[in-house]
Amino acid sequence: MRQNVLRPGLLVDINDLPLNRVEDLPEGGLRIGALARMSDVAQAAGVVQRFPVISQALLLGASAQLRNMASMGGNLCQRVRCSYFRDATSPCNKRDPGSGCAALDGFNRGHAILGTSDKCIATHPSDVAVALVAMDAVVHTRGPADDRAIPIEEFFLLPGDTPEREHPLEHGELIVAIEVPATPTARLSIYLKFRDRESYEFALVSVAAAVRIQDGAIADVRLALGGVGTKPWRARRAEASLVGKLAGEASFAEAAGQELAAAKPRPLNAFKVELAQRAIIRALMTLTNGDTR
Ligand SMILES: Cc1cc2nc3c(=O)[nH]c(=O)nc-3n(C[C@H](O)[C@H](O)[C@H](O)COP(=O)(O)OP(=O)(O)OC[C@H]3O[C@@H](n4cnc5c(N)ncnc54)[C@H](O)[C@@H]3O)c2cc1C
Ligand code: SF4
Image (tube, rainbow, N blue to C red; front, side, top):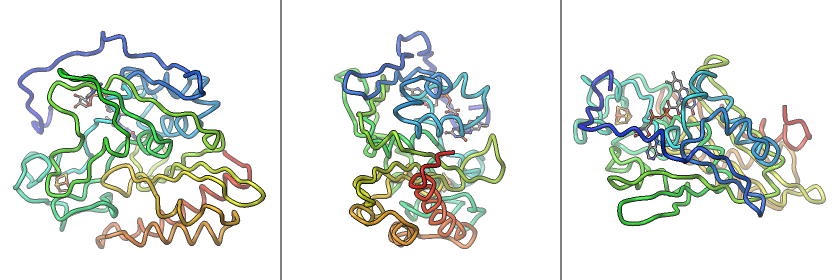
């Protein structure tokens, strides 16, 4: 708003709504209120113990001051960091549909390589969304007409021909909570984030990973990528390649290669293809060596 990118006619302060609780569900899942602060969620015992990937993703985002103020609903709905989107004088299909995309042939080092279209290549900026996508979270909303439960992968839309539309939320519809189903796989989980500096910086590449090994083979695996997709990217090709394989660098590298085969890099962000593959391998190696630091 300060940069004249958005000019809302009306602002509604929702901070007094009773939506800030982090609850443990009876089956072992979580219900996170949309107004729960990022720092409160990161520190909640049920999150730290049962879903370390969510806690780690939150703590690696933004700064301590921002995390103390920012809400979970706001984090999921934050706008892209593309500098052309935030410069109201540049062509940008997301800000001004039909005006063009200055990033396609501009400075696109931080932009996406997966899920792009010829209308928009902006990366989704959220860290915790990547962890929530890996955990099959569900976004609960309340609108003027009804309540909805939207699987989180469907909550983030690919840009396609309509990059201005990022979520399926209708006018007047609020996120009220995010539910994370119980999964034993989540206990052995990790969030790795690679960026230009160690704090207060968005991801060039990030990985949310969880794995369950049985008799040396991979019984269950969850993988999602940040910093490379136009939406938080569930790495389903890699997951499919890994299930039933022996845990080890060879199978991890094969899976990472299969996921990134679909990448459409541009000259300035082509480095992300290899960085993402290495990040996937690093995350899985760390988990399967029993070292989650
Ligand atoms: C300098 C800087 C660095 C950052 N770095 C990171 C980072 O590394 N990783 C990361 O993940 N994030 C990062 N962020 C984002 C930050 O963590 C917050 O998530 C973000 O600023 C949103 O803040 P907020 O909760 O106050 O939302 P707001 O700014 O209040 O809202 C954001 C949008 O969401 C909408 N909204 C808010 N709540 C709801 C709801 N319940 N239902 C429907 N719509 C809603 C608002 O209308 C608005 O459009 C960074 C932010 C800044 C400013
Ligand atoms: S990448 Fe998307 S957000 Fe950035 S200028 Fe192009 S259309 Fe706008």
